[in-house]
Structures are given as structure tokens and as C-alpha cells.
Image (cartoon, rainbow, N blue to C red; front, side, top):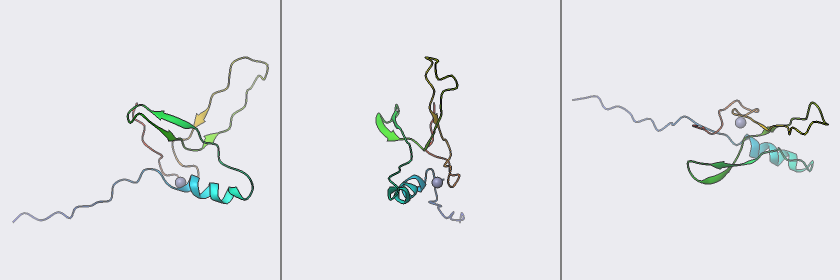
Length: 86
Ligand SMILES: [Zn+2]
């Protein structure tokens, strides 16, 4: 008799609720974390990005626009945010 392997249903957890939780705490300070809506090509749906890192232009006179930096890991708990396969 082959040994029965206990099926582990523990999928690698991706994502967390930190942004939601932190936003709840920030609410009373009239503050919210900056996130962006991203278009997911795979699913064709829009989804909310992880917290965005605020950036500023080096040369304010330059017409070159600043870029947006998205976080791949949660800045609060370190969990990897949603996988993005290019
Ligand atoms: Zn987190």
C-alpha cells in the first residue's frame, strides 16, 4: 500500500491585507496610501497596485516626467505582493 500523502492545501500566500489595515488607521488622519490601478493583461481586469513610493523630479524645470515606483513586496510585512509574470 502506498503511503497516503497528506495533501497540503497551504498555497504560498501572495499578498496581504496590510494596505487595507493601514488605510483604516490612516482614515482618521484624512490620509490614504498612494496606490495605482494597474491593468492586468492576463486577466484583462484592473487591479490595485501595492503602495507606491513617492518620487520627485530632480530637475523641476525638466520636461521629463518622473516615473512611478511600485513596490513588489509589502513595505509593512515583507510579503511578496501579487506575482507579475511578464
Ligand atoms: Zn503586508
